[in-house]
Length: 383
Ligand code: ATP
Ligand code: MG
Ligand code: MG
Image (cartoon, rainbow, N blue to C red):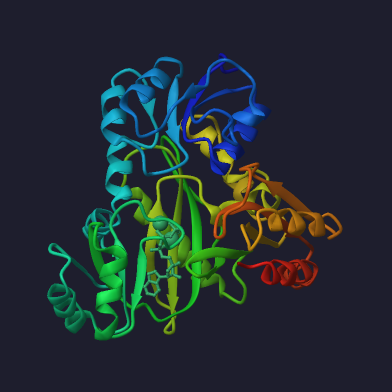
């Protein structure tokens, strides 16, 4: 048996909280670095947590002293701090992987060398209207202007429909490092959770994600009406992309399925991912279980990553009032087969992920039918 290992987690939001749930079931102590009373700390009582931010060098040093292996629930961490402590503690995935991935432009430049298909893109260096207009001529309209760094939930993206949108796009994003992407005319968005272990690259089945205002709203696992060949090709593409990075653990890979059934990578994350929440109820090992096992070199039977029952996951996002997410959760209490996850983040802000609900059933149609009334409730409470 393992000898009371301790995992250090940078970040104690909902992803950290669900990692702690997995650690708790294996008697693994998870030391969380984040603000006091962050969602992950609320469910883990011991004196090993560190108060501070995953962007503070000193706080990361302190966490490194108290754990055997360190990981992160978010890619926007101080990778220079991780580089420094990597001589004292194992860091998974590697700080190099996190550093490259946290800058979406560098991530894509790196993946290009491995032949991963992606939307054509151009770096901006001046962030001026003239420069963006030149890029617009090369990529065509619409195009997506994107922040290279600190992007999440579409905060960092601006759809530029024509030259006329350039001033507003730059007004919104000009203080950030930028690149622009050719529009991807996808018929569906797909995602695959990849688990990199010490000697294998495993994947969960391909799921379908639905984004609303660039925020993930629904996940269908497995993806609906997607032929087996595409399910396999998407998993293979995701594994190939993740193989381009050093280190162990879960990686979330987002892809576009185009009209001609070809696949393109949208982006990847060096961590557990919203598109993999369905695995908690849908699979024998959740993405959080697998991540912890991977970073601790514990066995992961590939069969445990298969989907046991079709699942639909719905995000509960902060709505018009501070408690609208609670109304959605309350409604979900009466839905058969619905598992409710509230993240205990306090008062909701519009657009903030406050929880999620997963419904599993014998068939996808059944799962969809059971969750539909809840989707309607969530649609009504939107800000
Ligand atoms: P996340 O919360 O997943 O980290 P993010 O803020 O990093 O998101 P992206 O994943 O790059 O942003 O984009 C968010 C969504 O915007 C995508 O899921 C897709 O719906 C849309 N999108 C992004 N790039 C393009 C593109 N080139 N063409 C068309 N739509 C796009
Ligand atoms: Mg992203
Ligand atoms: Mg994304």
